[in-house]
Image 1 (cartoon, rainbow, N blue to C red):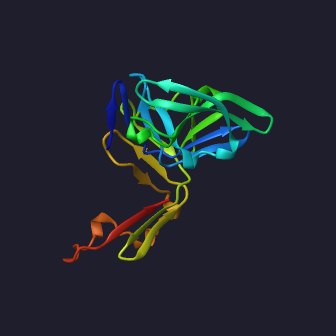
Image 2 (spheres, rainbow, N blue to C red; image 1 turned 180 degrees about the vertical axis):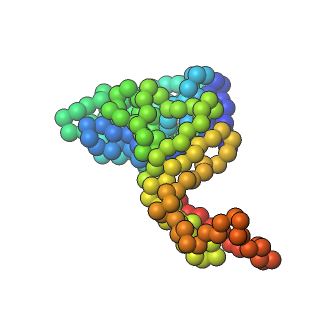
Image 3 (cartoon, helix red, strand yellow; image 1 turned 120 degrees about the horizontal axis):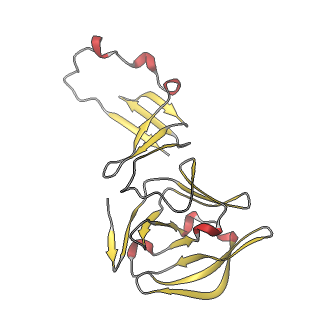
Length: 200
């Protein structure tokens, strides 16, 4: 897992899909969020600007300076008649390369945050202090030798420190007729079979 430290800020990619809601609208939806440890106790999400709805951002004409992260353009998040004043910091450039082109939304100024399909509160979950199993609506398809073995829009995803995400699928989304019980399993063929999986 790639990461970068500058001063007291550690940055690394987040494995989870992150969505942010305000006044009933999706403000951001990203599978490329970054986690930044501005404080040692828990991380903060920085979202690629392409994954944040720019039409909901209103520039205030001011900047916010951080010795480690650089200068950010301050924006208000406006959804209908609701305004979250100065709730978005847009880092078009940053001394921390991974944060260039990202937006930091103020957590408590938004109505709701979701990791995968589950709402989270107070701050992002720290991947180094817990193991999460989250319900998701990602599309997962598993193929073996070109044959679709599983196709699901309702996986549960296991996030565990130091390991890639692992997907658990409902039986109803798996071709059970293609599975062989271990007790009657035939010897594996001598040639390697291609096993592929896709997640969107």
